[in-house]
Length: 427
Image 1 (cartoon, rainbow, N blue to C red):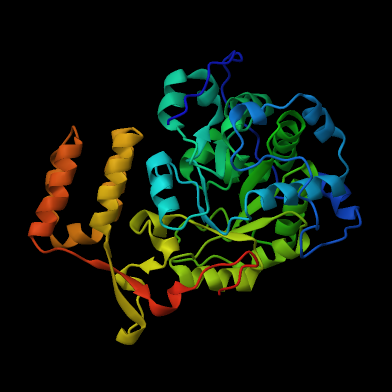
Image 2 (cartoon, rainbow, N blue to C red; image 1 turned 90 degrees about the horizontal axis):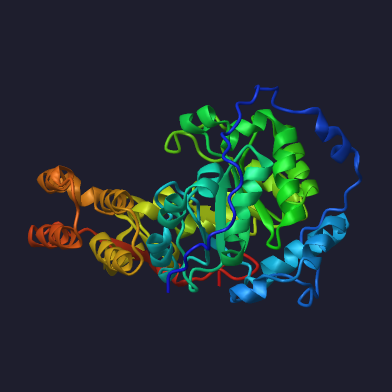
């Protein structure tokens, strides 16, 4: 079943207001920094009865009376931490998470990744102003179904009221409303959102606080790090103090855009995790399951996010890996009886079940069959020449590649029969 966002009264049309850049660290950090903190490496215990959303709650159960909202406004810091952990625990403490990707982490792809081991997923980044103003944008860019949980719905924004209006439209259908504070791309600079709000921390604080005070689902944030570690820690503490219930940390700075040249800083993520009391997720350098184990051990994070590697290999969290990440020792690998064409066919079938814009489908075809197209570039040229796609045409692309013998199997390491436990260790 595909859910459609109900029509709600639209706020007046607004544009995202340009902001005057300010120094990286704003003065508002002095007050939270001065507060004494009791840091917990483990979540509070015996919280099952604390009020929070359940993974399988129906829409009518989530729409509780507004007393819950009033309660959230007056919760102490300790109570908020307890509620944050209670919610995370009721979701099963997911460890393996599909990161938000513009035009790429849409419903069919999320469902494919869930089949192959993902415990939770983010939607693509949604533009909060356009989401409030355009029914067409909402219908095309955000779809979900009852099996699509736990789910983070991510928005970019620089206006607290516009963000709140957008968030209220999706809160019955998700487990977190997430604020994108990490996009480093030029479009984010032009629109004054994502990582470029790091120059205006008071605005970031107001975005978080306004959602926390008015939503019935928890608020999460996804950030990048500052060049200075102490600035990063102060930033993370500010978000926690503002009411953020979960923080995902990409271990690269705003200027470190080339993920193949710059490795994510897991030490910085570890420092953030050690400084906060809410759940923390690690993002960066997750290319296969060995990376998952190493990252959880190195950072102490409560889960990991993967993005680019999942686009090429949606079965990553099930232990499959592409040939470039297979060790040279032949005894350490085996043919997983699965290849990227198999995954693409599964994805296309999900797209027939859950329709999405063709531009998204085209992008996934190029990502999943990229290695195959390098062997047979004329097939890629035929795809590029096709201005209007059909499922019949895309299935024929797979058939042609198979007839040419272009199969490139995914591999399973023998040790990847291990699973990730709730404590983050392999069993």
